[in-house]
Image (cartoon, rainbow, N blue to C red; front, top):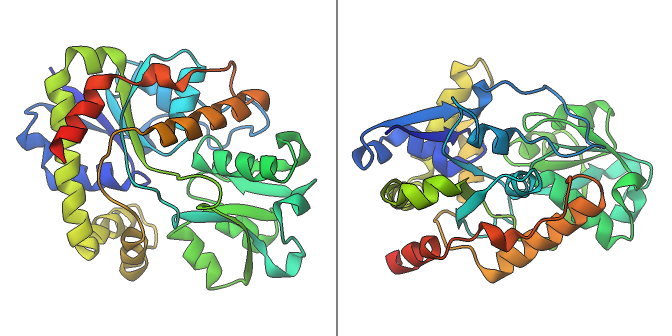
Length: 310
């Protein structure tokens, strides 16, 4: 049976794994599904419920069976009654990005964002970071004007003055730093651990355990290679960008990969606590259709496999 794995550059581990051919040595029939090729709106309304493309395509013919994302999509899945299972998490990606504003704007703390336009890739980890930052400042989602900049945008919007603040991520954030003096309103480390994570449908986890174990083993092997060979790994991202007619710098990508943790770990109680806190705030803000229990997505044997592999 074909194992469909969703990938895109923003989950660095799966993107590199897709190009190295390691998983195919363990699972004979693998179909790689490029998330960028799946139909989705160019922009979503960040004042309404989170977009659910990631979870929807887990449950759609022609979609995928396993996917790797940032912090927020599994919460969207659970909020939309999708029966998912966490497979693993990376270490904290605290250097991946931060909430910034132009130094000349006079915006120096999250409290200054009231009434301001804040750029985020809505539905990604950036939504959660902004929500946590606002909550810490005593503000709510309705106190700001969230603007969806998509995962590829934001920097140009900030430079052009179309937004007042931005949750930027590397390597895109580096390009803005070279052109504009920025003030950090909130760094990631002070808000949450922000790991990469991987999840699947419950029926896949329960009925295709051998395939799931193969994916986890291949990810561990590939991630170890990235950590030892960040420049070679960066070349995959640069080549992909150039093939699509986009600019990309090898040194910038290498620096971004060197600043990120690689490896696949069991979901921890601390991670689940963060996920639950985020889920509660998202539901309170009307960004999830219902409250969820994130621990319902834990299948004990998955963590046991990862723990035994250490």
